[in-house]
Structure formats: C-alpha cells, structure tokens
Length: 502
Image (cartoon, rainbow, N blue to C red; front, side):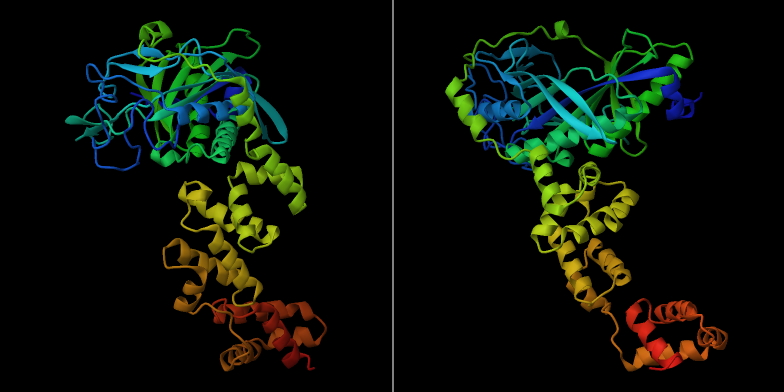
C-alpha cells in the first residue's frame, strides 16, 4: 500500500489548484502559584500526583473557587490583543469522559467568554496579515496521560497507561482565531509568525513562561483547502498539541500537501483531529472531531459569574508593558536598521537574543552577525529553535569581545562556538583549554611565513613582478599551517616585508 508520504503533492503544485484557510487555537498555561480552582501548587516536574487535592480530583462534595490572579492574567492577554472585555461572563461544564479529566467534565467557558473580538497583525515577507481573534477564554488544564510499552508513546500499541493529575486544574487560557483565508503560499509562515508574536506578547505580559517544550504553550493547527475561486471553504482538520514554532509551520505545510493529494485522488477530507510527528514532520489520524453539541455544555453551577469592574480593566490596561510591536519599532530606531532587517530578526526568533546580547556589551551589528549567521545555521542543522541552542546571549557578547580585542579571529571564533555548544564552558574557557588564541608574531609564525616563501618561488616571482595580489596564496598557506590561529592581516604584512622589503 502506498504511504501518505509517497502521495504528497508538491507544495507549489498545491497553490495552483487550492487556496488554504488556516486557524489556530493556542493554549497558554498561566504561571500562577496555585491552580485555577484550588490551592494546589503548579510546579513543573514534581513527582506524579503529588500536587492534587479533592477539588482538582473532582471528589464528591468539593467546591471550586476561581483564581483571581488567573482572571487578571486572562484580561491582560485580551487587552494586549485588542479584545473587548466582557462585563459579564461565566464558566461552563464541558462534558466528556476521558481519563485525563478526573471529574468527567472540564470547567471552561463556552458562549460567554471573558474576552472577544481582537486581532493580531503579523508581517511576513513585507506583507502584513491581520489575524482576527474570535475569543480568549479561561479554563483548567487536563491531566497528562503516559502511554507505556509502545514505540511511539501514544495509546496505540501501548501495554498500559498511567495518569499524572498534577497538571489537572492548572489555569489555561485558550486563544482562538477566526479562519484566516488569503495567505496563499505564505500560510505556513503566517501561522508560525502568529504563534511567535503571540508567545512574545504573553512573555512580555509576564503571565506565563510560554515554554513550548514543557507544554505551557501548545497550539492546535486547523487547515482546510478549497478549489481556487470556490467561495465555500473545505473541510478542516485539527492537528493537536504542536509544541514548537518550527513544527507549526511544518504541520500547515504537510497538511496542505496531504489534503491536496486526497482531493486530487477524488477523496474527501474527514473532519478529525490529527497527531504531528516531530521526527518526520508528518501528521496521522487521531479521532473524529467533536462538535460543540457533543460536549453538552451547561453553566457551571458551583461558580459565580465573572463581572470585571470597568475601572479595574482600565487600570490593567494602563499597566500593560511595552508590547512586542512597539518594542520592535523602538529597537529598530535605536539600532538604525531597516524594517526588513527587523522582520528577519523577529521571524528568526532572534530579536530578544540580539537585544540581550547588546545589553551584555556587544554592538547591535556584531550581535546580529552571530545570531543570524553561524548560530542560525547551527540551529537549522540541529532542527531546533535558535533560543534552544546551548549558548547564552552573555556568552555571545563575550565571544564578540574576544574577537574585537584580537584574542581570536572569526575563524577561531567558530571553533570556540563549537566548544561552547558542546558544553565545554564559556568562550574564554574554551579559548584557554584548546589554545585557540590568535598567534602573535612569534618564532612559530615567523617560521611558517618563511616556509611559505621558500615553498613558492613562482608566487614570489609574480609578486616581485607587480602582481601583489598573488600574496593571497601565501597568506592562505600560512593560515593552513597555523590551523587558522594566525592573524591574516599580520601574516600579510610579514609577507610584504620579507618579499617586497620595507
């Protein structure tokens, strides 16, 4: 049987026949000290089932109390996204029976969410795309299922499953976009840019650490295709719990290619949830997608409605920090760079890293050079995000300082980077441990220069005949002999002195 991967349509071919429509549901675990409806701790990585109580386990007779800090954080997110804050909202019970919900229902918000009708503008390839926000609502997170014995970590093929309820009840904000048509071939990049910008906003607000690798920011990616010119949107799929920015883009791209193959073959797209596979960048079928009616929503009888005071909302609005868009505009002016360069920094996930590197003492130009150059290449080769590399902005600034001081050159700096990324210490430690400092005008360098001259009489003749640029071959020979430790301008000067005279 032909595999799905074998039947993918080339991405450029997809766009000749179909128009993509994307939508994103982003879940943010709030960084509150206690859970949404009880006083249990929310520390990540605690021993399984040690942060639970009768309330978050749904024991009979236990009653929830809403976490005021979580309500405030949700309003801040809504304000930052330009949402209207409801003057009256309430919680609802979302009923479904699955092991990660100990109560048999999730306390969420349904038809009366806390924040509605916002937007977020993102720029991709010089074009601004407005992503409309449908709603920002508050709920509780579920427990975590651990499927044991299978090869994939999923329930299929597992011997048994374990459940950790530590996460159950942690405050969770869900940010739901409206469908986003019109992105065309940029749909994967727009999806990634949106989640990137959203993550930066939440991080700036200080309400979550938004660490995707720990699940405090998770994204469900919706995608559908409709024939070019067709006014009716196609059936969507929802790829669940995508946990990296790069994977958001890959999930959209894969689903566009997969769905096009299905439609080209005369098949139909099934509305379902799908799993994303990090190793292959592919998705696989999960379960049929429920509709709202399947959850039998009804108002939560144990919680009073939320009625934020207008003065309180305005106070929170006034206390909002500088948001990412304003920060970029300020830094662009301070650093004297173009809007395109700023977009490159933002899209590469390097803006904060460059800003911190500058704060640690590097110039903006040097900081951009290393983060967008060698470090970006290493991140791409490793298939990871730039900020996940094992090097800090302070260490990059230290590296820049060593180069500017003449202790190392750019070639040696790349070797130093390898050492830092391998966990061998900071730049100065790696230089000392590996003896990577630039070689001064020592006996060893003098010997290398004279050996290069003695070994290339034809080059010497050309130089003396007026072809001074031929010295470049001798500079290269010396650099090779010294394993890049020599300073090229110094080598060139020494060669000129010996070949051409003072």
